[in-house]
Image (tube, rainbow, N blue to C red; front, top):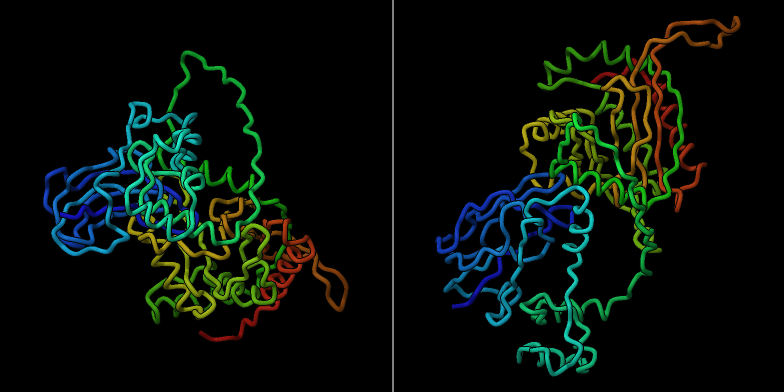
Length: 434
């Protein structure tokens, strides 16, 4: 019977790995198509991986707590169904993943190194062509693609003892034909200074999510040239308008009207004037995004953050945005997000003001190039210019900060975006209706 590889599917943009949290089946169990086999978790969401075919679990390749790369096999399933060649594994090249106690009980110090090794597995190859086994299928594909024995010996193999599988050779051929971007500049790791521990100090290992967030944030700082601009905005007109309409809004639409969807709508209206802010940088290519997919940084009960995404936010009106914000925030706090909810973001907004912070300097959410931080709205004395001279009045003010990637966005653009936002808010039409 053919052996089907149950692989870890793509879990969202910028997610390259996941942690096995629970096996729902054991070796020898039967499984039906679309039945969940294993639960996995990333720094963004928890999810289930289901089988595509009916069959029997022949081998589980990773234990609970193992970190697995996207597209890597999780288990082998024997089936009597006709399956696609892409998911068919050669029985002579089943993947073996030795797991040590250190892998299962990984420490914060070893996490970064292990994660990098799992994303790009390093395989020790034989130094002589005679000592490496190639299946007839792999040899035939290599012959058709005019790959010499010397070139074939350099193809990384993910099979047993470093054998080259069909997937390996096809991946190599695809990358061989595609133009390769220049290699990224990798900074030499900086050794952390030793930490003095008092005998009474509490030592608490980082959680899985904390490890993932740590790696993601560190990588962002190493990737993007972070720069920040700040601006103070008078939101008095907008504040008064919201106070006037918020009760009717709840009655008509069933959700509260917070400032978040209002700011989201303004940002989606301004971003088309600055398309570079809604883009990504891949090598030396700038990819300007057609849709505005807004990431909304959401605080969880354990203190961690997650960034669900409002897809095509520029196509939604204020009511649609308010309902989507409420839905995603509720699902995030109830651990009910799915992988699609956290992928595809093109620009992120974080509300640091909900914790009373005046402002912040957020780290860019890769592979995006900018992130906006909304500070707390406060009543403060402000100087106003009138036809009778300057006066001091009590106003609602907020500080907004903008972090952006200086590799492609200069200070003028980053600052002009904030100025346009300030103009739209301070000139808010408080006579408009819902």
